[in-house]
Image (cartoon, rainbow, N blue to C red; front, side, top):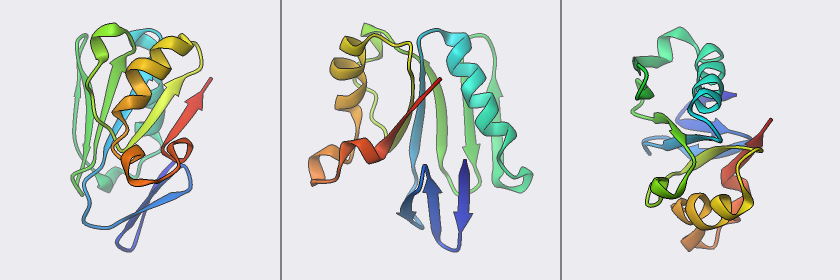
Length: 123
């Protein structure tokens, strides 16, 4: 659930100060699983918060009016290098991919913040 609360955005119970543009990635073990999770998130967003949605067979992104960007991605070796503020990670993704490809992309892990607070495993 994503909420905008007076100059703060909260994702998974973590508050990010207003004015900061967040990059949120939804990783799936398949493209369909990533797309379905992002669609669930989109369905729970308030209509007035969404600026643009781009959805086709190769790309699914949601841009909010505050600039936050949601991207659905297939988790595989080629997904290396994507940086994110928060991630939704499919529980079906191989642990090696999670540890070596996905988690190193967290922008907050270098600032002494708990990495576990910046992602959520979904079923």
